Image (cartoon, rainbow over all chains, first blue to last red; front, side, top):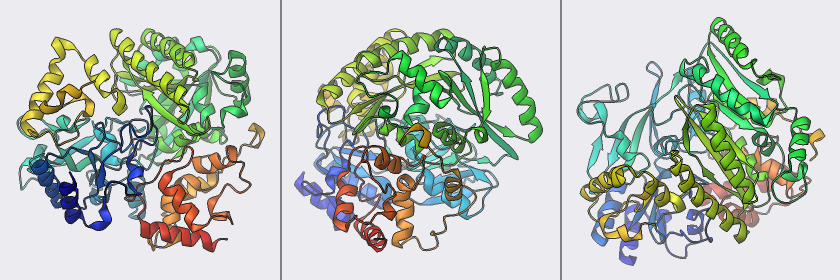
Length: 510
Length: 112
């Protein structure tokens, strides 16, 4: 390993290799530990500047059988951040590769390297006065490519970030460089225009996986609409959830509800507004009476929808009439536009995100308790009232049993709900970490038994989630690992990512 | 900060992020410009900025806007950036390298 690390140093230069004991290495550990701090600590970190350095690193890793762990910017907090699944790996920080290769206003796309963040891309679009919007997730410092590859979500109509990617460049474990889709043709001018190319479409193999290192990716943007506005709809009762989701489903499928909006409980708006201590000084979950006090003080609903509209003034007005009429079926529903409630941080944050303006407002949720970390659980369900209420009851009960408030909600996808539950806990409290860890592990199994699979998880739970996808004796995982063995026979790339292990390391599973 | 005191500085946020390129972007290597892009995203003033809110709520800071503080020594800033504190994660050298961090601390010190 030492020889390999010294060779990495020659590849990237002294400034970009952080070996054992280097004071910068600590920044590559999991900043939001769910296990004991240091459980997933890397051996070293190396930061290449370009594809050639990536290929050189891979050559060294193959020669010396060095386990690598790659990431775009390493800020996937709550999912492990920059930390490797296998402690003692050398992490490959791709953030220096931060060129915006192209932005095409006519066809509304961009091509980016791993290190390009939403802030950077937004600033670029603004400075060039381009009439394009991107689709940021909550933290604006996230990598555009990284978020998409981890199946993340933005909040505009093009919020299925991976779904709106088009064309990749991938460096395989043996150093071969592949371009997908129309990029596989050297003189193609449609790499970012047509996803499928010819033959098998392989882009999905490189999302949430360890089958190659993505070094360029095309993302579709959207032209700024002539008119836009965002809104909030509040519902007074906990029991309103079923009816709200039933109303939402046809509106979303017909695209009357246009963006990846959210249905969230009181706690979401509360936790980005002020710490818990502003509402209640006790320990454990807020009692019901204090929840209602909070709801009354903030003048929000028990449930709250954040949505947005895009189009012409006429089309927006017509669609609003339909939306308002539909949700008015819920007694006590109230309707606001973003400008009506400037004091609500959650609404204002959503307003900005829904029009493609990245921000860091979501990190306010870490002010809910001192020294906070968070870990997420996100089972996928159909968009039905029965599924939403069933999962809500389970997740709320488990969160509160673990001593946490239910902070989460539902992201409304094209045909599905992402049932988000965020455990927010004091990361310095080992009892709290253990309770949350055990609860998440139990919930992964429990929700899977009910037919709800997680779409994304922390490195600590990747094997658990992978095992829950059990059709035909885990046929999908078995197939993926056969591909892994073919593409990465030495098993150097991100072992254990999404539960995919190289042959020589399969005993580490679990 | 009580609920009655909650204020959302929307105008400040809109100017930062909408319709205008940041006014300090002309020379992105200056400490002030680097502070704006690397630190200000969390530490500017207002309810949308989690660093500002954290310092207001949890630390009892009388001056939660970093660029207006008079007690931030370069060594302290560098320590916090590299180690993290509370809910602020440690920042990798590819997010802000040593040269950039030096320029930022120089800028903050010039505000004292």
